[in-house]
Image 1: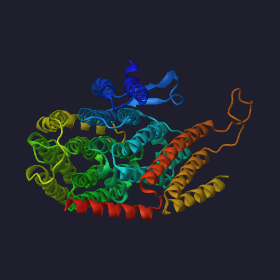
Image 2: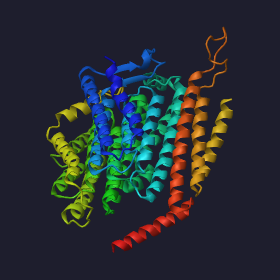
Image 3: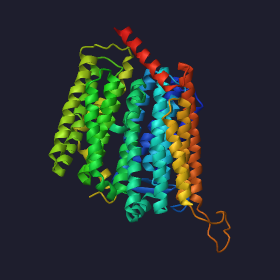
Image 4: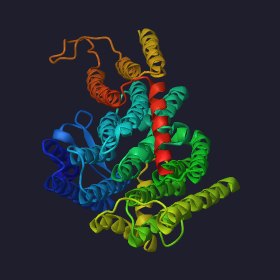
Length: 459
Length: 122
């Protein structure tokens, strides 16, 4: 039963190729894209259920011997991120379809991004990882101009150039990996790099870290991020923050903990410092802003800092915390970005749920994220880290409720009226965030499994 | 040979960075192209082996050169080509709306636009 492994890849791929030919502004076409993504998500869910029950599955395309054909492998970590990304993309697409799609290519590009992201999370080969990564990124560059005014093209240009630099650095790292180990298969790379010279391995680790930091929008690598998030439509911002940023989290986890565990341990202090700088910088900048998209953009910079800190802490607790925090953060960002151009007390309540989740107040799912972060902090025995996590939470409370107050309570900023049906997706996401917080067992089990899937660094 | 490739990659990458820092959209695109080609050259350089062309049947008793890096380089070239086209489209769009590709002038236009927006709100 290896066919199921290719199904989540093939469905969006074929659907996207077909959708490119159609006019996405017609509601029928947009709903067709929604249907394709829903089928893709269902296939992923079935595959994920099997992976969590029986362990990782692997297949090689075209029944070639492994090493010649493209190896596709579904393990717990990849499945968690694939499910999250596809769910966020589906939510954003449904939201935009209900509000009315404004561009011919929007549905096709969104489905292409789902195909690229799924391929990336399933790839077991460093170079195919890069190829799928570019598929997802190119869709993102094109999507970031969607529905924007003229100045959005400028922001998209900066977005594309900065992220292309990151991609090329990653490609150079791939060349380095091949030169050092003579293979591109991730299992071979792990053993090969363990035997490689320390200088070469450190160089590769630094290149990989910089490449993924650019994708995540971590503090010194972030300048492209606010401009893109502010100018983009809410649905696109939700996709970028909730789905595309997962490339960075997954990449740091996969390449750090799985492929370069010795370098990760050696550089853990760098990750913790970078992540901490991001948390503080993002929160302080967000407090100083008034525009809702701007606040959320800086909040996104701060929130990914937690993921990096958790990876830096390492071990079973730290990696589990990183996975869980990335999951919760993806859902939060999707919920918050989708609700910024809607009004009404129901949306206000949904936004408050998202805000509570960012801050880490029970019963929202973000509470779990903060709990595992505190556990990771206590595990390291570092007082500074625990204080930092608390400080980050307090600052995020300040900016999230400033925003809630001006936008929903005082009603200081009016937005155009929107049809009541556009609120559906936001409400569903809010209920999901609450449900995951109230019934945390599945989320904890899934993130533990995902951390265990990470080779030598796992428990 | 490895040293030669490293020097060439360094020069191409450096020139790309230099262009990237210029205040002109099309120079930035050209810089990106150079950096992408530096990455492709690194890929080719990563698998240097001396030998016959890797086409079956292999000549007996002789080494064949590594075909994998060439396949990788081809794929990377195509991706680079695609993103260059995309970047040029974006640059053309910026030019169509602002009538300039100079980054200083673009940020000036941006600043005046924001001032106008703020005045309109006040």
